[in-house]
Length: 493
Image (cartoon, rainbow, N blue to C red; front, side):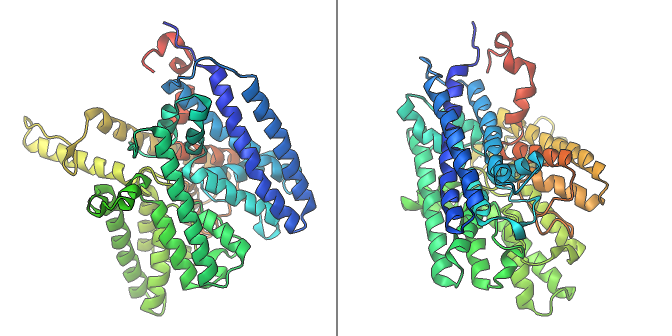
């Protein structure tokens, strides 16, 4: 039985993705015109028209009578979509003359769509239009271009379940309605509502300019960590702004499929979710530890300062948003290691945050607990449970495989980045920062989110790590497996 890839359908969907990204450039073009950055506006216009025509051509001439997307098609579509989106997103940086390096432009674009928020540019000279474009890329990448695309697929006569499953972060994405497209629409409705609410709070509760409020809203709701000033959020020196951004990065790091429960009045089910309770417990416990460590070591003069900086940076690292309001590289080693652990854990499944995710950490600890018990009682049958629900062994195996693949990729990335000759802390934390989509590292150079010290080839390594992390490694790794491309050996896919 031949189950070759449906390349025509794949091309049609990818053409739609290209059109979405092209249309998303138009607000950045308008912003460039408003700020009288005419060369940048022209770059957006050319890029948008060029790729919109290309996307429309792919859709028009890639007709397919088969509308069923198999798992292999879904994984291929997701992988290529993020790569193509990053390629398209890099063109305004090049066409505007702001960057003469494709590697740097691709890094900047990939950092946007993967919600990593890092940069290799000196943002003091970055045009406002390009800054707005990066924030838009973060916002689109936060919930996922393809989750948005799934809402459009029914109009194309296509089922998007395989795409939704391949793109959405986490080990399991619960459907919140009977149709997967309705689920995606509900997620985006919540995402947009959070975006508008945060924007209003920033405008009404502070003297932040409207443009800054837009940038910071798009950057924080996507847990991308984009900011509009070289000093980052420290520029505003506002506890209110820091509090608003912290709250919304935390909200975006919660499993979005839980929010409909609150809308429907299911408060008890919402707060009984094991992953949510563990995530909040980790944030609270880490905040207490770091604040006490900062105060007792006289890093700051008052307990108020220790609470302000400690709690904000805990929220930043645990949500992988990558904001910094202080130079935490001079903090005590205990605090830095604690934040390092938070960066590894990340937020919840089906959220905009990156890294391993809390649910996988829970499962790994449950596995360790079971193995310890079985050493004492080798004949006992013990299932791994989340709450009262026993997990299938296949899911447990997938979790263990992912965690191993995560650290293997981290080790490989660290080895490649060591060619730059930087210190161990910078090299290792940079690899983790990219893979976890956090965007800041544990060193003086990394807390600013600037990684321009890496050579162009290594910037591509950083870009690859970001995409691997955003698509949770296996989605990309599948493309390198021979059986993925061989129909006769891939019948199980």
